[in-house]
Length: 194
Ligand SMILES: C[S@@+](CC[C@H](N)C(=O)[O-])C[C@H]1O[C@@H](n2cnc3c(N)ncnc32)[C@H](O)[C@@H]1O
Image 1 (tube, rainbow, N blue to C red):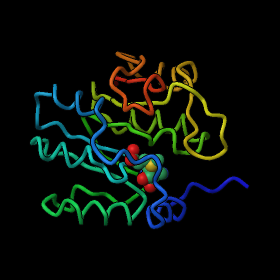
Image 2 (tube, rainbow, N blue to C red):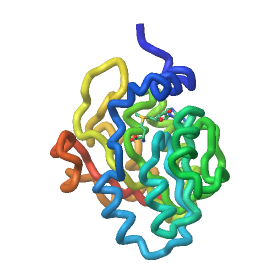
Image 3 (tube, rainbow, N blue to C red):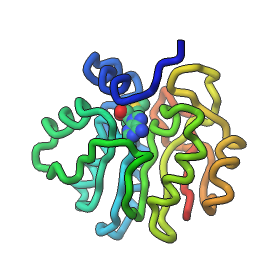
Image 4 (cartoon, protein in one colour):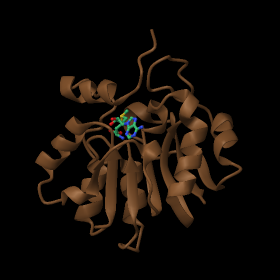
């Protein structure tokens, strides 16, 4: 039977340590993107950030208006323990689809592929609503659909364009050249502008 991808599901994955998606460090493609950003005042959100190495990196680099939202209290508690100097106000426990706010940049990494497939159009809409005018959704999406009935679901560029093309200017949606080895050639780097 298909598992409900709710708070209990995700929190128990962190409690059990069954977090096969976790890179254990900052994604190289996102690090490279962050490193070329000049405006440290950008308001940034990482949805479904989990252990959120990128959030810690953003704060270390002076992007101190950067937030994480995740359903899992365990993931947030783990983050707090590892990053005691980052104020709790930057860690939002909650559902991305119920969040409100205005951000310059939303960072995607293995969140879109983890939500139920029926929520994909809603993700495109919700992200659009959370972005300021000219704000950007930037990150990584799988380039193949894995045909699974549990995450990661994956997807294809054609399918993604169906959700995003009418709402965003697609500045980049092409093979990532700096994925981690096990994901090399299997990810698209996206820069979508509201
Ligand atoms: C596959 S994990 C990826 C975590 C992290 N982005 C990474 O790459 O290590 C998916 C994450 O999304 C979170 N999540 C799932 N549905 C969510 C929702 N509706 N709102 C907020 N977080 C959610 C889960 O708790 C989990 O941390």
